[in-house]
Length: 249
Image (cartoon, rainbow, N blue to C red; front, side):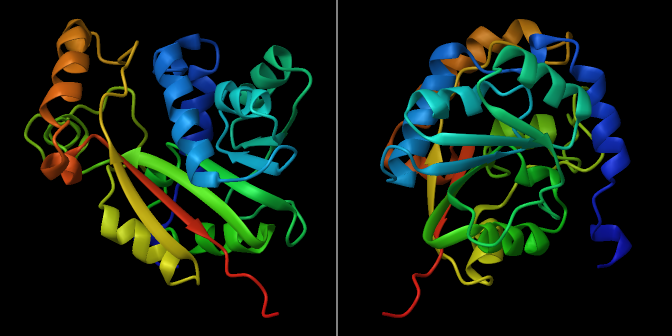
């Protein structure tokens, strides 16, 4: 893998370990967290008791919400401190340290995989896509959501080519994604892939204190401007989902 496309694992661990002491790591409102899991559960289309891996689980908020939906959950994160917090907050769930490009699971271990705001931290996604395919059973599904580079707000604030780019609260690895590129990475691995676009996901926290006061206005405007169907490709978040091919009968 070319060095320019490699993720700096050390910087990721350092960044997220430094955020582990603060619940500000969980940036969405509770209602939005629930809405995200509504979308994920619909795209999963898995029955109760399905085994689900929450990769890049952070402090375990989404893992716990998946558990409440009846899934048997395992959370995985690169940050030891975030894994410790997740274990303390949700002792009934298995949380382990791990790298989503080199997962410690047997082939076909899971029915579903969630990647919540993770893939935009990976400059190169082929290895991660291959690992997800490996750990899913035939017919298993993944769902990922990430910031959309074509959303004006995400581009202006979080894309390094923007004149208004802010590096506050981001790692050196992350970039907003382009939906077709994300879908292509998983399709190339053999998944049947789909894409949805969503806005109206409300933030409760923003790392930059200089613009944090704008959050109420952003939450209102983002949900309104991009609501029409023709605006869908410009919505703030891309949900990429797919199914591993079933074995031949």
